Image 1: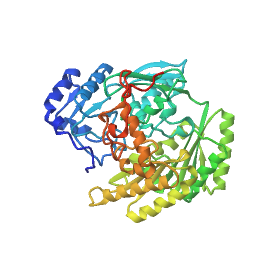
Image 2 (image 1 turned 120 degrees about the horizontal axis):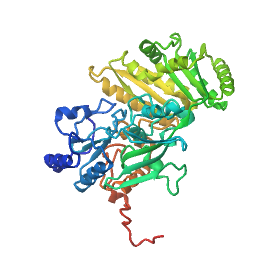
Image 3 (image 1 turned 90 degrees about the horizontal axis):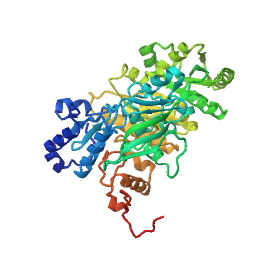
Length: 497
């Protein structure tokens, strides 16, 4: 499938051999991949509907190499697309025909673990789960846990501000990253934050987290690690309707209970997950909630009883409580495997990502049911229900003419519905190319221009990940940019302090 991307520069394409040679001089050995058959593995990310071979792939090992690559590309006006593990579900790492694909997978070391300050310093290619594996021997863990945590990289998590099961109580990536090192498009190495918990001045770290590779290339990440709770127990609760399950979610939060995790699955997802992992899910329900409570044992026991009472009042027909860590892990196994499990019931599926106010969950579920009938396509729903982050999986067959286009239209209407009820276009997958053309549904033209002014401050030539996030890209001069470089500003007549 093709999508509208920036028109490739013929000047860059004509210099491909020269560019490849220059990159090989910067990254020796096997760090540059330029053969078409070898680059094919990088032509897409997790959103496999979009494919494009890059101009060349480069896999640096050191920060100095990253800086040299970016400095060369800036001087020669060559676009650069940063890439982590390639698990992005929004086309955020989709290559460009005239662009260098800068892959950070060789940055895969845990550099430091500081238990006294409860943090770890890691390279961006370290997997999400790899951080927990590095600290769990001392009873610590890294809280954000996307379903792809076994494969997704922490650098990609920073780019997309990823969440996961535990983000309701413990926050997204932005709440758990306390420092980054990154390289600008001009090849300058900068640090934001660090082991200290507070930073002076503007929150540039917050700006960088979730910036989707448009502002700089992250080469080091300092993350907060947490001590594992004394007790963690989970409830597996079944409901006769998805609307009742959604109402239960809202009631639990309204009662002041913040679970460690609260996930929801509907009937198609339940049946697919159970067939895939044999988690022991009830198959006679329309919706399933997994609610995990953690903390001191007495508190957890009290909250388990409270949640069970709330569930019963909201129409639950079945409830199981875990009595061991193994049983709790089994409850979660199906949810964690829901995406691959759905692959057993449909040749293809299109994974969406939108976020809504919790109280609107019943309305949005009803709306998605109506859209499913309108487009003639099934949908399996898995949600980070506690924070309103929806992941509808639209079922289609790419071999049937028109089904992919219908799936995309279905998905776009789901996202429009999310915005209509006061939600947002993405919770953790990012905008990328998937949601780029929907940005005007949520932002005015002035909003988007202000966002692009920030882009211009970091990347005046629009070389970092062009074609992503913004539906219409304005030249920085049109926006009245002020670009700061090495202490020099575009308006020297202005007073300085």
